[in-house]
Length: 387
Image (tube, rainbow, N blue to C red):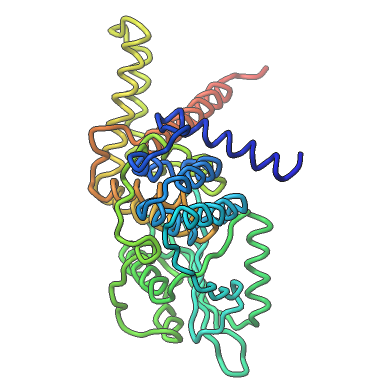
């Protein structure tokens, strides 16, 4: 299929998706702008179609959205559509400010600041890898490596000297073996995360951290200052909880980095008995009532997930992933993750279903129950007396 034909197919797919959301795609008007803005991030095809329609609305509000997208989209068809939109708007008399060519960002691990830092995605158990690298004259880099966990804090911590080429090779190997990138983050933020993880690990008696302060002294001493999460510098203070974010958030579970996310907190197991009781209870008269009872259990578990220390850990995890998605060219997913993080940060999922949280709880229940069944079967087999 020719590139032009493929672009047309994608555009038609996007227009169909927008039409399904009730957006007038045949004759867009300024009244359509709010709907088109809320549709951004749903899918690359929807983004392409939204830009196409916004380009037909020659008003400053539509132009502002397109200019904002111009800074974030990476899809080639969308980039070309933005140029077309600028041209069409200019033809209709809208003043398009000439943009200065963006300064090319240096490749990852090619930057040469005095101190730099990198972070991996958060794995299924709540762990993430952090590196802080400090350039040393004629000695390459002093690289601090830390494995940080949501609940347990700092699990591993150490430092070594290496060349920049070796650091880049380590990142490439992680990408090759695990499909996970190391993204650049402010080193002050990485230092604060590591320090807080150290205090948490020390409080629970973690061993192997006796040289923490000596190693950390290569980049900082004393308690670090409180710094905001970098995602708020990237996306600003805008609250992305508008439009159908609750329904769309479940798509986050389809991202490769989140595919193995499960809830590992001990309290999640407390709900398994309730699920078994609901399934086996003679009081349940029909399948509808049974499903309603199971849904109520899931909602209660979601509330528990958002409360207290669990909620704080999940909020931080989602903020980290919002940044990770943003830095790996998935701005739409980053906004969804940040929207869920903000909701979790309120300590309650709210009155309406947040599909990501519901899906995460359901997936965790399914895994735990399958493990429980396997253990029960194994126990039965062990009772069989062989002749």
